[in-house]
Image (cartoon, rainbow, N blue to C red; front, side, top):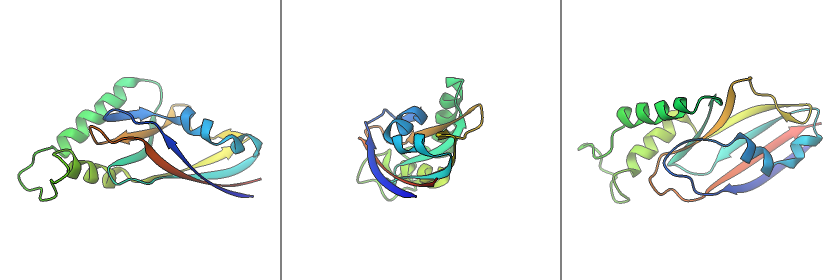
Length: 139
């Protein structure tokens, strides 16, 4: 079986947000699968997806601190600045982390590690709602 769905998650403030439950809520078809995989793509160039720690929120704070130091705003060498000082850094952070994740499905749920969750990495101050495409294959 193949399914492809487009859905949106509401706007989030700049930062790293655990959205595993939100994504799963948008994909009720996963519950019917004993085995499969979901490929999740975020259709934006200033936000990204990654898998990481799902228990301690300070990990998400540390992610923000690290990436803000790695790619600082208002760097004199950025040329692409028409959309604000957070725009080019957002594009770079998105490229570093990536726009997609693939997650195994087992017995009607995501088969993530005990401490893993899906992060929506919002790199803009006002990024708005974010659109995703989920492609599901399974039986």
